[in-house]
Image (cartoon, rainbow over all chains, first blue to last red):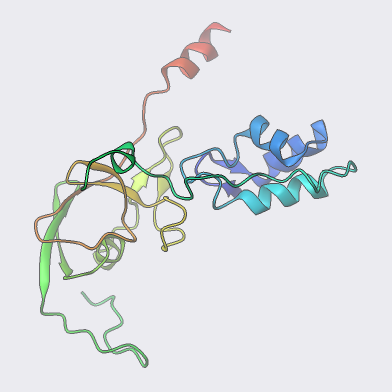
Length: 84
Length: 112
């Protein structure tokens, strides 16, 4: 079952990695690339967070993946002067 | 266009007269005016909108509300347009995305 569609990361890969390295969600993201794709983790962020929390005995519940601008992928043209 | 819900209990009935034509990967299709590209292609039986850049697996509509960017296509040369949110226009040229080169990964798999 694919969790992160942008980078094609499966549930199995995530659980395995989280167990093996006892990951926080940020570490899990960096190891598997889940949540680092085109959509900016908007689709799978909560799933990656909860897999990390449930797969380790460490208290990683306070280290969730962060939210940061821009809230949508946006072209450089839009940030600049182009009106189209 | 038989796959549409023509008479909906809540929404107004659709009249299938005001059509526009557009192309998807050089095939010509008909759609209703103000259809989204994704809906227009679904009605025409096209479910694969693009292929994954790295693995080449097919992609289509996923969230259909503009969150996930799974349906991104190139519209009149403009990349990264969401098919689920972009209304289809007369003469629009839509192209899908395909697998890209993975030269570095290929090189590493043979040389490491």
